[in-house]
Image 1 (tube, helix red, strand yellow):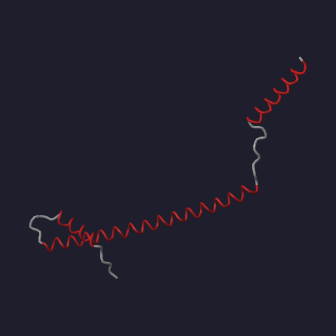
Image 2: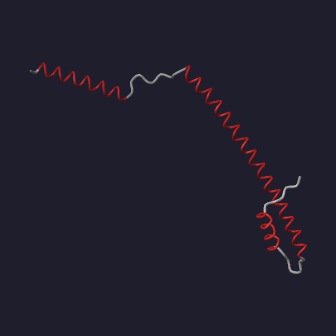
Image 3: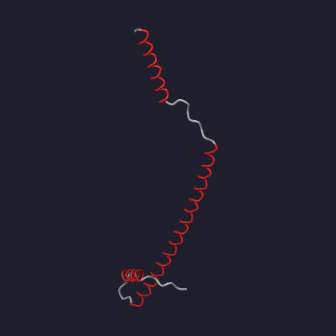
Length: 112
């Protein structure tokens, strides 16, 4: 099962062969060089496709494992919720304002 290369690849290979042509080189030799370049391009494309498939498989497997671990993390997060600190800075500020307002109210009633 021999694949035929695209016309663009054949033209590129012929252009490369003509660019490297030496003086006195016969047209048949140039065609042989072009055929070798075509074969090299086909081999390169085949390797790149294989590498892309491997990268895609690795990426999909990584996403699968990541989603599996994140679903496990979600389950464990639901079973234990870490309590927040009882009083944060906003709570302390509001408590301080409440105490200040009652102190001012008491001072107002006392000095009236």
